[in-house]
Image (cartoon, rainbow, N blue to C red; front, side, top):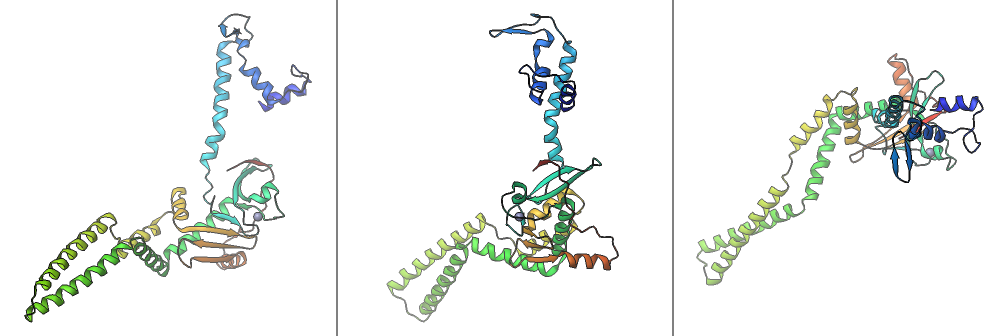
Length: 314
Ligand SMILES: [Zn+2]
């Protein structure tokens, strides 16, 4: 439609108001059923009310094509997911980095993350945009390194166990009360053995027995409502992440969603915070370059400036 518009304007053709043709005028022409001879007057449609200028078949093909184009951007968007959206922040101004894509002069689509402040020209932020693949690869590989580290896994397990205990505050309380009741019963039984048995000791014993039964029921209910997950099971569950294939989009997403809390990106370094206590890691890009140079792998770690023309943002 853009091409048709440009062609018409090139021919010097104006719309009914004498203005140059715009996107809307083309759309109205293509949608206009009068061209197939349909005439509508006060809500009554006469299929052959006026002479047709285009065939019904051509008109239908045009409608089908326009409907397809309308859906196209949505399909295109869904294809490419920006995995770090909502987790990636600008280290300088604290704003989110959002996904954007642009087409270079060679027609290649480039995807990148851009600071929202820069995009909206809100503040004096000058954070450079970064390539989507580059930052996502970096985050995924750092997360994988963390998952492979036994000490980190241990730390996460103990944190999750603590969390479980705190969430289920009633259970330890009932268990302690039960221990106290048991001790009291034992003391009383000892007293009875030593021949101290009065009416009140018997009543007290019955009271304690009832108390014990009540606590045991409560404990059973708590355990039933929230079964405690063992440390072994959590370890097993965490270690399964080691088998993920980092080249697969869904696996990459799983790693990021599970372990990454936030990422603060600067032009010379990145600070990753993971979803567990003390889970912060700072990586400077100089370190990365050195490490890569040592491995004799050609580096493309430079934060390349993103193409200027934006197609859409996510
Ligand atoms: Zn910024």
